[in-house]
Amino acid sequence: MKNIDNPSEKIIIALDGMDKNNVFNLLEKTPEIIWVKVGLELFVNEGPDVLSMLRDKGKKIFLDLKFHDIPTTVARACFAASQTGAEFISVHTCAGTKALKMANDAAREGAAKVNFKPPKLLGITILTSWNRESLACDLLINQSIDQRVEHLAEIASKSGLGGCVCSPREVNSLRKVYPETFKLITPGIRSLGSDVNDQSRVSDASEALKMGASKLVIGRAITQSNDPSIMFKSFCDKIAI
Image (cartoon, rainbow, N blue to C red):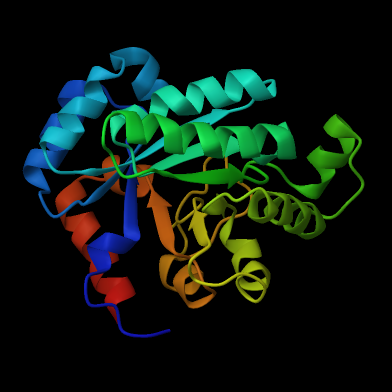
C-alpha cells in the first residue's frame, strides 16, 4: 500500500444513532472530517434537510439508504436522491440488473437537472452482519459469502455502477478483478480487540486498505468514543503509515 497523503479522505464517518445536534457537535469538534455517511436512522429522524446542512459545511456525503424495490421505484428514488448532492448512493445489488441500470441512468438524469456532478451508485453485496450459516438458514443460499459477494459485485460492475459495498474480508479478492476506478467501500472497520457489536465480518483499518479498499466506513468506534476528535485522528495516523 502506498503512503496516504490525506488519510481523512479515506474515512467515511457513519452518523448512525445520532440526531442533528449530535452531528453538528461532532463536526464542530472534528472539522478534519471530510466524508460522512447518512443512513436510515438519521435520514428518517431528520429528513432531507440534514443533507443540506452537511453540504453547507462542505462535507462529502454517502447517502446509504440501500434502495431495494421494483426497477421503476428504485430508479425514481435514485433520480430524487441524486439531486441532494450526495457523492455516493447505495442500492441493493440483488434488486437485479434491470433495476441497477435504470437507477444509474436516473441518477445521471437527476443530477444533470440541478447541474450537479452525477453520484456514484454503490451496490450493496452482503451486509456485514451476515455469515454463511445465517445466509443458508434464513435465505436457503448455499454459496459461501465470498462466492455470493463476487457474484453480486459482478452484477454491479456489469450494470455500470461505480462500485460496491463489501466487508473487508472480501476486498482482496475483488480488487484483483476490478480496477481502482471501481470503488470498494468497506464497513465493519474496528480497532484490533474492540467490540464487533452486531457485525460478523470485520477488519482492522490498515489491513482493509492494504487489501484494496477505496474508503473505510467507521461509525461507533469514533462517534461513541470518549473523544471522537482524538479517535478520528488516531485512525488517520494509523492508516497514514
